[in-house]
Image 1 (cartoon, one colour):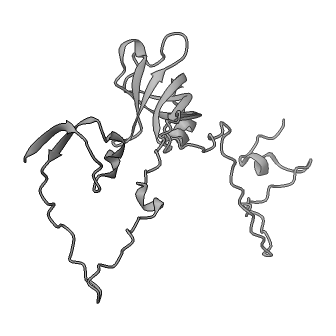
Image 2: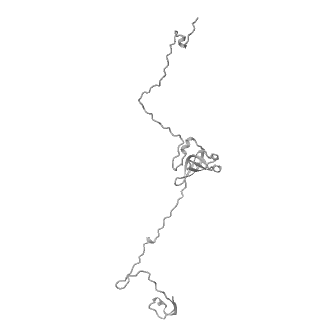
Image 3: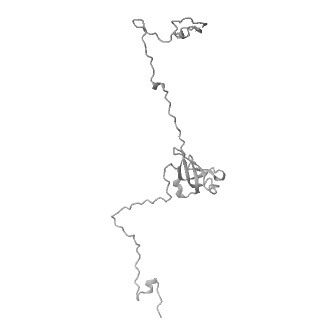
Length: 226
């Protein structure tokens, strides 16, 4: 690229440079730079009959197309676990220090983590392997899965506690302490007569009177009175 600097007094106006008219009669400095012709990057334009290129209006995309869609932020809500009073029966296993933590086994595949959450000494100390019924607060996650039980009380299991040998579900009603009601069986009506039980027959006994002999009563002869 060639650059030329011209420093001279502008004596007269230049027709091709009308912007220099206010500087006539003054010394000016003109810098001339050589530029190469830009390469044609656009497609060929068809000329009309007179050899003039038609005027085209630049296509401006709509404002909506210039806006990049932004996904709405996803807010993760950390919901607290749900608490519910539960009762469960199982075998004590893996008793920790001071009985503060242990596990309640319901079967070979089911076990519930437990934590002693009451005052006093934990009743599961020394009770590993025994079956106990416990009551407390069940901690469930947002999907309703039992995470652990904060135990409030525990005692040796009774035969009636077998109905608590299950995993408590969120929202279920706690089984009642009352024993199950007896099932009433309706009596079947019959029209057949009821016969009395058979009485075994005995040989008739002799009637007692003044004329009855001692032999007839006792089966032996008696001596005559003198």
